[in-house]
Image (tube, rainbow, N blue to C red; front, side):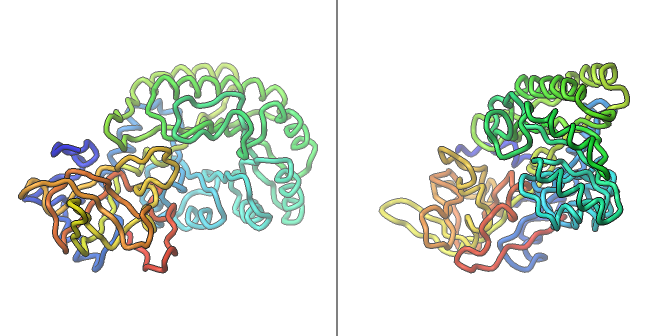
Amino acid sequence: MSGRRHPAAARFPIVGHELTVAGVPLSTLAARVGRTPFYAYDRTLLRARVDELRALLPPQVRLHYAIKANPMPALVAFMVGRVDGLDVASGAELLVALDAGCDPQEISFAGPGKSEVELAQAVAAGVLVNVESPREVDLLAQIAERLGRKARIAVRVNPDFELKSSGMKMGGGPKQFGIDAEQVPTVLDEIGRRRGLTFEGFHIFSGSQNLRVEAICEAQSNALELAVRLAAHAGSPVRSINLGGGFGIPYFPGDKPLDVAPIGQHLRGLVASASQCLPGVALVIELGRYLVGEAGIYVCRVLDRKVSRGEVFLVTDGGLHHHLSASGNFGQVIRKNYPVEIGNRLGAGPREVASVVGPLCTPLDLLADHMELSAAVPGDLVVVYQSGAYGLTASPTQFLSHRPPSEVLV
């Protein structure tokens, strides 16, 4: 990487030679937190991203935040007032969503292995359950009868197509997610025959982390077409169709930011088509990484500077146990560096090629591999950008029993 800043870094201004978060210099922020490592999320960037989307998407499309991307309670509470709903993937996330003040009518619950306790939580709270197997339909009917409450249901469909060029494919072919499209008519019939179940719609999530406009638009069109076909087998009107998300963010050299404007235009056409085919239906876009990923940084402190056979290693107090994604061990086939800088030496002093490693007893504990960085010494602060999503809660924090990092919403 050259001395030119990554586009993600440009979201965080420099004062003097220090990066700032919401106007607070990095060293000041570190002193306020009291220790490193820590994650910091900039609420001005969160607000700006939602505002950008609102301006580009048709107003009829409902915007949901998938809190699995970042379930920090303060961040979720901040997002509640800015999005139309929340999507959760566990009973614990459901409690975070409810504690954040989200209307249960605007919460949906997805995941292929929901326990009976979690399903009971969902029915008691009145949230929408995206069923992913006939087992869940049967359990929900029993729970609804036992609690004397209606169970709100949407069918998560494993589509007969994929979201091309996705970082992670969530649908198409054999998958643990959702019910195969060809099996959905049978499941809809079962839902219609069981008392206490209220069918509301479909959830069709085919992939994530996509930077190709054409692929996203094609998947959205295919999802709507599939939902219209399946609606003919439903015993009640379809009220909502969750088209998933898939919007990616640029992590690596050569990645280009997603142009959402043409996706917004495409969705305008889908809204018109949906209103004709399924009157009264609401289209939902479910986004996690795209909403919060670029608003967060991970900060750790250099503990030691070592030179081994001519190569520089900066040993820090953070690593893969806090930020598995940045280490390259969260699905990367070929490891690539996240954007990294020495946050208190920006534009100051000489630069050198160095590797940033953590304190763990494994060579996998690598945050930057042979990157050009400002020359650093013990006490300096390493910043990993694009860290607002799939950071702390996607990491093996108990590995080697180091203490977990802090999180702050600035």
